[in-house]
Amino acid sequence: MTASDTAAARHVLVAVAWPYANGLSHLGHIAGCYLPADIFARFHRISGNRVLMVSGTDAHGTPITVKADQEGVEPAEIVNRYNPRFHEQWERLGISFDLFTTTMTDNHREVTWELFRALHANGYIDTRTTEQFYDPEAQRFLPDRYVEGTCPNCGSPDARGDQCETCGKTLDPIDLIEPRSKFTGATPEPRETEHYFILLPRLQDDLLAWLEQREGWRGHVINWALGFVREGLIDRAITRDLAWGIPLPPELDISTAASEKRIYVWFEAVIGYLSASREWAQEQGDPDAWKDWWLDPAAESYYFVGKDNIPFHAVFWPSYLLGSATNGQPPLNLPTNVPANQYVTFKGAKASKSRGVGKSLLDYLDDYQPDELRYALATILPEYNDTDLSEDELVRRINGELVAAWGNLVNRVLAMTRKNFDGVVPEPGELDDGDHAILATVDRNLAAEAALIEQVELRAALKQALDATQEVNAYLNATEPWKTAKTDRDRTATTLWTAIQAISGCNLAFAPFTPFAAATVSGWLGHDEDLRGTGWARRDVSSGTVLGEPTPLFRKVELPEDDAEA
Image (tube, rainbow, N blue to C red; front, top):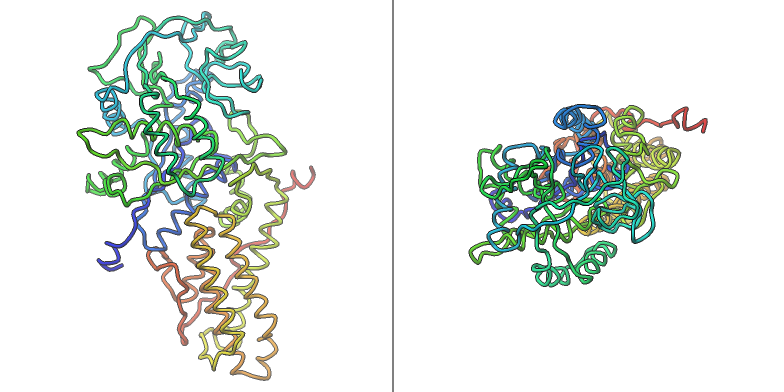
């Protein structure tokens, strides 16, 4: 990439939901946010844009302390157990983070304090005495997720104290009907305690004006966010009586006889996108590098989350950013888009680590190649509706589409070239209308795919890649180079040359979705296996290029025995 290209490149922040370190990710998590984020990031890297893709382990989420209490260990032990496994699953699946960190770092604490202080100085945070549930048996205050009960909005009996997963409403534990302590099962009792609150109503007008100007957001995201804000925001506590988490800035500490105060996870976790960007910059040896994504008004930021995270990323996080601006300066960049996905379900039940619904990603990677799993999941991403996932659907997609259409196309064209032209790209004759048409089709589909990925319409984008591949297969069936090889060598050379050029384009189309295979095919075609910065356009494969010896890109898979028997 030249200096002028670098100057013209867009800065794209890909911010991905932070997983709790209480268990391994399942396919619901992967299809919900991690795979879409990676597809989007890879597309922009190939296109020559400057991508910063960050996330990390949420070390302070209540599920971690719940698990630690259950096992009788410190929360840090739970985090340290699962964080390396997260790195393992990202590497095996090809999720290409520029930084995957944790919220336990000194850097994250300092950035959280910085934002807290700015909001406090600007008059958007103050203290007040409030009621918080207390477990009389455990003799401790209960964080929101330690309280369960019946949702006052939809009647679900298993609502959490912070949010009902059934109806998606954010809650306060005190509003739950028949509340119970998740720690002991006892009926908690409200007791007075002092906490810091963020005064969201003071930010409501600015936030609403910003939301009303959003374009291109998914309907279920923008409609939910607008409805939530128009109903009227309320002041929300952002500290809790806890012993695990980020402490208050020393100069703002509140004394209490019950326990130490901590900044609550729902406030500090989203700050991780900023703290991770700054940590990445420090690791690059350029501490100010993060500013290209956060201070440049032309930079773009996309937040990949599940629909249960819409309030935190489309309402609360923008509020913090708006309220923390100082000295008349504009705020740090607000989200360009929050393409939140719906849920993946398994036989109608929502995938859940805590409830044990859905196998872990690492279990699936023992049965499937990473590209196979990426492809199959990408075809059913829950972009607008919940998607029920079954093992036989994964197998059908892999065998009937990825193996039969794309893998077989590459193998047979390269094999025919090896057989008839010693594995060297032949010199074509004059291209006829059919030859020109298939190359135009591939190029047209590439352009359409790019437009769809820009809109984060990833399922439709993948269909453009598959459609192009099927058209190339149809072209081969019509030209029959296996027959003309016996009667017309020049025509065969032209057909295979054209097919190789088309494969180059199709490989680019599949690259964000199946990166391992894309690197392999690129190498076979005589190109660099690293596609970053090569541009979103089909690259010619010159006549005379010695092609790599093809091996099967993918393997046909069988339904695992336990699922087949079921």
